[in-house]
Image (cartoon, rainbow, N blue to C red):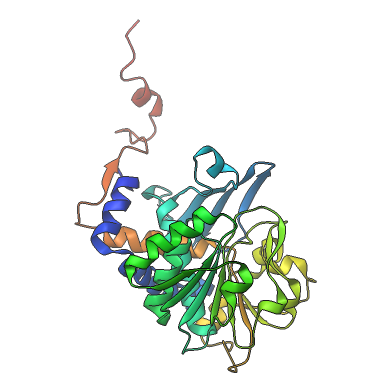
Length: 342
């Protein structure tokens, strides 16, 4: 049997733990996994692009566990009442190939993305950062705000989205959580004076969501919306004057903000910073960018954290996912055991 955490299970789990505990727990697991980067078999995700969006498989494995996530990105979905991003994930035993854990990952992806963003910012942003601009107020915005408060002490938020209803939604959700939150009139208004800027928009185009003139000395830019070929958010001039950190360079070269620049543009992988092999922020006035496209290790860490956390908590169920005949060589007899006798 395979352990399964469905949508209602994940919602119940999040309700018992709370988003702050869930995000910081995932971040701690991810930090530990980044420190053993070399123990993973890594590759860029496998993507199928259409005019409607993208469907991706994100695989990774260590010596014991193989993991993958199925995820889509369809920016036109909200217009017909569907989410832009949905996902599920699997953990399998390397020794047998059997899937041992399956979970919904629409909610979990939001948690792991926020955890990854805040973990990176802990190494890249100024330690006294207290204000953040959120450019894009979709499904990720509230999770990002909670992650940055828990892990960096962010208290003040300025939110802007091209959709005023999305901006109002984010302010409505965040104000009761104790944030000093205000709806901005433009992206420029939102980022003015901010210590950290998070960009998270959905349109599958090369856009300038954040202009070079808006980025002040010492800012940290958490760029998480550009995540596939042909989709960017930052003025390339920002990248040229910043220190840029990525998750997995081969994938980010194809999908991240740096797809706008030459293949020799220098970047540092996040694991190097976390493991102390490369510096994070080196001066107060340095502009830092986390060019985040989402990488399979983050899903691995999130799935492993949830799997371990739900043990004995009545927050998962067993599902009959893999056929297990009494005689492993007699699949035919197993499959036909309910067939009528002729």
